[in-house]
Image 1 (cartoon, rainbow, N blue to C red):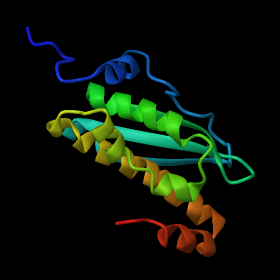
Image 2 (image 1 turned 45 degrees about the vertical axis):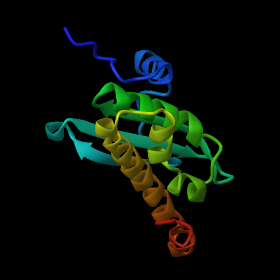
Image 3 (image 1 turned 90 degrees about the vertical axis):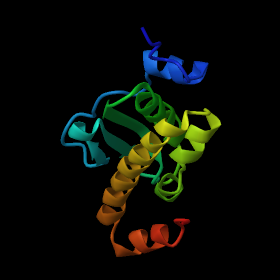
Length: 144
């Protein structure tokens, strides 16, 4: 039988086995902004929620995920890394760079794109709620 963790390092295994910040925030909190990406029928789906403080920083993040160990570990690690960042910083946070640091197998690095898309969708909702000046400021900082 093939080892399901073949090709994954200790950090990925640890975050898969004990993921941080899973779940959802209670509904009705105006400081929570959600974004999602992927589809179960394609093997990977991520929903990220960001709770933004009055100072405009991410106080907490939560996620729900369906996918492989790499996707789950990337969500866990990203949810930790986003705390304390501004929306502009979160918009350019590179989950792809995180996947590279973890030395994920090449065929699993596309999981990072799905996680990034979900985070950026949540940041986009936050920016939309802040008005056009906020969205323009963040989009000018996004690096392609």
